[in-house]
Length: 349
Image (cartoon, rainbow, N blue to C red; front, side, top):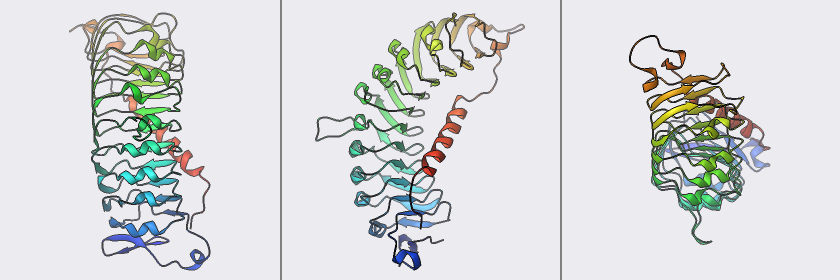
C-alpha cells in the first residue's frame, strides 16, 4: 500500500523515512496510481520539497481535502489526483504552484468555487476539474491584484464538464492571446448566450457547451474557428431560424451536435461544406426541410423533427440511431493525456 517516499500513518498518507537511493537523490517524482491507498493526504507530504510529479490517481479510498498549503510545493510540475475520493474546497494556495504544467483533479468530490488564484499559473497547460461538485461562476481577472482564468494564455485544456458551474460564460474569459484547444464546459448550469469572444481563440479544436441552459443564437463570429473539428451545443435552449451555412463550411469540422434545441427552418448544406464532415445531428428541433449534401458519407440525423413526419416510409436521415459525439472527444483526451504525461522528463524514484 505504501509507495516510495510515502507511507500510511493512521489514516494519513505521509512522508516515509528515505532509504537506499533516496538518501542520495532528491525525490522528484512519486506515482502511486491505483495502489488501494486509504485515508487523507497529510500536510507532511509537503516536506517533499523537490517533488515535481505527484500522481496518486485512482485511489478511491484517498479522501478528505487537499492540504491548505499545497502551494508550498514550489517545484511541482504535475499534480495528478484523478479518480480519488478527495473533497472540500480547492485551496487558494494552489495558485502558488508557479511551475505547474498539469493540474488534473477530475473525478473527485471537490466542491466550492474555482480559486481565482489559478489565474496566476502562467505555465499551466492542462487544467482538468471535470466530474466534481464545483459550483459558482468562472473567475475573471480584475486588474493585477485579482487574477482570473482569462490570464491563462498558455493553457491548452479547460476541462470543466459535469460540475455545477453557473452564471453566464463571461465575454472576458476568452482572448486572442490564448492557446486553448479544448473548451469542455458540458453538463453544467451555464445560462445566457454563447460568448462571441470564443471566436478569438483560433487554436480551438473541440468546443463542448452541451447540456447547459444557454439561449440565443450561435455567434456568426465563430466562423473564425477554422481549426475546429468538434462542436457540441446540444441540450440547450438555443433558438434561431436556419442552421448557419458557415457552421458546416468550417474546413476541419468533423462533427456537429445541435440536438435538443429550438432550431427551426431548413437545413441546407450548400456547396461549400467541410469535406471532413462526418456527423450532423439536429434531433428534437423544429427542422421543416432538408436539402441534402452531395457527399453521401455525411451522417445526418433529423429524427424527431417535422421534416420526418409522423408515419410512412422515412428516409435514412430520419433514423434515430444511437451515437455519441463525445466518444471521439473522450478518446482524444485520453490519447493526449498519455502523450502529455509520458513526454515529461523526470526522475521517478
